[in-house]
Length: 346
Image 1: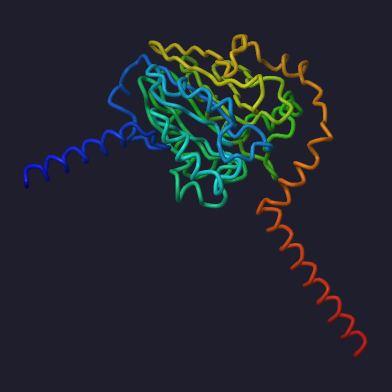
Image 2: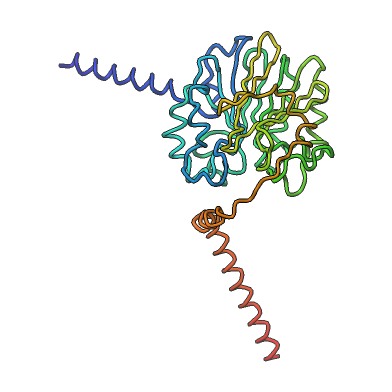
């Protein structure tokens, strides 16, 4: 009897171990397997997985859910998501965990966006928001651009410096916000309606000098995921010397795509992957000239007004703001009444 008991217990332990091994780990460097020493490897990068605000399902966009085979390909060592994974992280994470993350079989690294943090929720329930790791001869750094309103400060700046001073063939930096575009005059109106800082960033003053200090033989790829709602494509590419600034994000549209990345003997190649079987150009073709000349005119559909109003009215943030406004108004009225009373009694 004892033999049967221990055999069953051992079987359950093995099953649980295998199940745990097969599930994606989020921002967990230890989840990378022993092959992280390989100089030849592939991975995928995508962004804005909730699609658009009309997606109230609690799932990623349908174009993401329909392409799990790409994310789970044995060719990919890991999967990077450059922010806005969720529409509302507190509401959506339980369903994402059950129906999306648990279906992924490769380690996942998320550079959080404004929809992903909700205070300290991500750090307390999902994982760290700033991590770095070396894979092959390349350094990878995941940064949190929500933490200091887009500026890279303190520990994050130290991690970035360490990565840029490392003996690496290539350096990959992942953020949600394209903080590298905010102080670039050529890009001032390129990413319309995307996440921007309220009081400016320290990119030009403190971050760019670190990047420019990297040896010319080392390529630096900064990949972000906030293109804005009127984006003409799911990609953006701009190069200055050995610095490559890239964006990729989906919107639940026909144009949705992610990036396949290969590192072969230190040489990096990018492959735009359509999530709707469209023919795509090379990444480098989605450059500044393309973006400046290809912004589509978005037609407004008045039939969606009711849906938008409903979404606003039933979201908790609306009621937070409403209650706060009522409290402030009441305090203001009390203040005015007391002031008048003092004047009349004075």
